[in-house]
Amino acid sequence: MTTAHRASGEARPGGRTARTRQAVLAAVFEELGHGGPAALSMEKVAQRSGVHLATLYRRWRCAEGLVCDLLNWLSADVPLPDTGTLPGDLRALARSIGTFYADERMRSLIEAVVSAAARDPQAATALRDFFGERLVLAGEMVVRAVERGELPPDTDPEKVMAALGAPFYYRILIARGPVDTALAESTATAVWVSARAGAYRRTESHNGAPHDGR
Figure 1: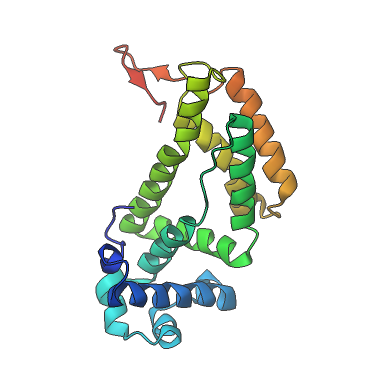
Figure 2: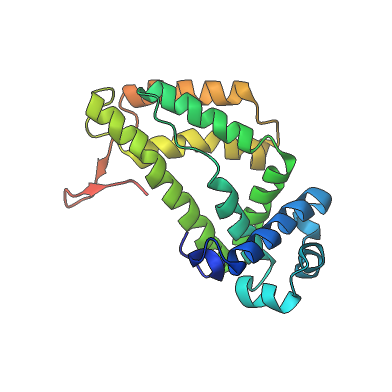
């Protein structure tokens, strides 16, 4: 995720800066579990992490920067499957997403990031970049499926992956219901059937050039 909220120590994954980032983001995660996004503050994170408050402001600027960086950090643990079939890949990824958001702190995190994006332009950019990059990465599953002949050749990978993620965020942010195995299974099945039927084909702009529909 290339934004102003990226921690400055990411380029040194084994050094002191990386350890500082890990301590700070772990403290943010704990704070979200303790008081939720509304109670999160730079001062509480500094106290819990043992990192000087000035360092937090220099590297992350604000609490919004912290939660955006935490989302990026934790999402790296969601693997992108390669089972050999798209139905298998969709089911595996949906289950991983469901497991990711089964933790109440993860739900608080995405709520905090969406709330931050509504208030802060840089946080909005961070959120948009994060999901854009995840869609492109996960879209490789669809590219492989097209190459295997499982889907129509003009299937749009990003549309497929957006359809897979949408029910989870609706459940968390709008319906505020549980994220469970049943949701993962039904979502994966619905996306597979729709993709096979050509529901996520690329569209064209008025000048005939490919257009992704966004």
